[in-house]
Length: 272
Image 1: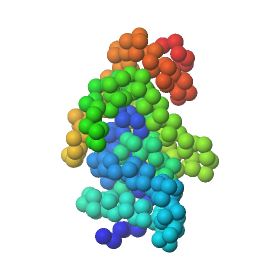
Image 2 (image 1 turned 45 degrees about the vertical axis):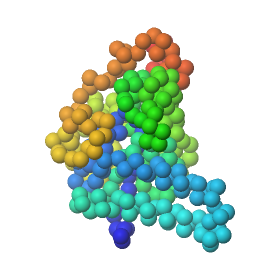
Image 3 (image 1 turned 90 degrees about the vertical axis):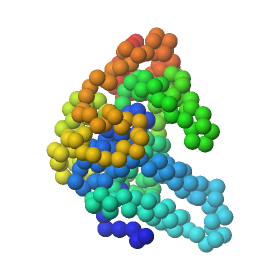
Image 4 (image 1 turned 120 degrees about the vertical axis):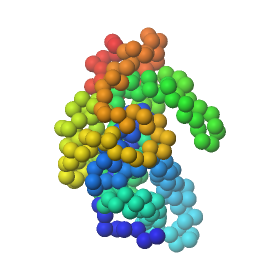
């Protein structure tokens, strides 16, 4: 398939699972210029493979006369090809891809698509932990439940690892202008102002239709938040940790993620 190179660079969206990535993906998909379909899931795997091609496999690939630039072109073109049929089917000029684990590979995706916006959705880790523990997610390879859906401390560590991975983009000034963070709480509490800033970052015109995302029919492909994102914005899930976390659970979260909660302003200290 011939990839359309005339469209704007793809948008990549990620964040710890249960942080609001599905909500933001349907909001983006509601924009007249952006197609953001069900999470493709394979982008993190391809990004990881791209890294392996540049490291452990590179010497062998050199013997096949492949350069680093050609490897980059191979992977970028593969991803664009995966996106293209869906983008065309939606009749929109731009694609956005939401897989939560993209957040672990923002650095790689930036190398492949240096002009692509990277959106990191962040939510209070305490609420994320509570939500993760209600999930029945299983590892596709082993068939076993993910440990971070079974244990409070591991859920908090997963959240912390995901957030810190995404925020590595802030460490180099040359990358910061392609990276933005958006808080789930801000989307829910102050949606119009928050989303206007986001679309300015994406260099897309503001269209209030995105606030009516729940009125549009779309393929949610069994996504975990499918029923929730078919509803208008609601705030009842904010601060659920105050109801759901027991004292011992709070101690486990503080041990794994307390410093990051303070760094992000979700807590003033560990006395919560």
